[in-house]
Image 1: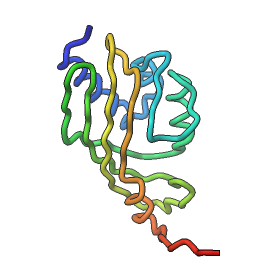
Image 2 (image 1 turned 135 degrees about the horizontal axis):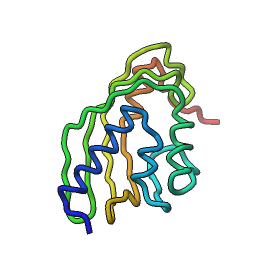
Image 3 (image 1 turned 180 degrees about the vertical axis):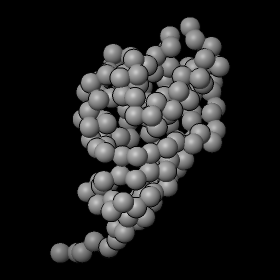
Image 4 (image 1 turned 120 degrees about the horizontal axis):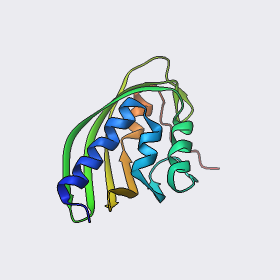
Amino acid sequence: MSSIEENKRIARRWLELITEHKIEEICSMTAPNWRIHGAAPGLPPGADGVRKLFEAIGPIDQEWTIEDVIAEGDKVVVRATNTCVQESFLGIPGGGQRQTFSAMFIHWIVDGKIIETWRNADDLGRLIQLGARIEPGRSE
């Protein structure tokens, strides 16, 4: 069983590896049945899911800054800020524009492996930074 401090180190490293775009190292940190919630839908479990997630994200230059890491038992919560330039996000062209948004991740870590991840990020804020407009729906 991993200690709380070791689990916090694993959660921090996970975001560092995303910044460094070291997909295979991220895969090595995840359990074969790893799942993520709040990201691209329909990802397969485990390392294949990690690879598909980065494939769905596409080309991106990003840096994660960790603001808080809180842990209890086998769960670790990370609050972080991302600064990135991405080709497009949810179909909205990035146009080379730098975006900044906050996100929280909850990792379930067992025996040194991330079993499950829950993601909650300010995706709407990112879309607005890229110039997306919100329009009211129309009644028919």
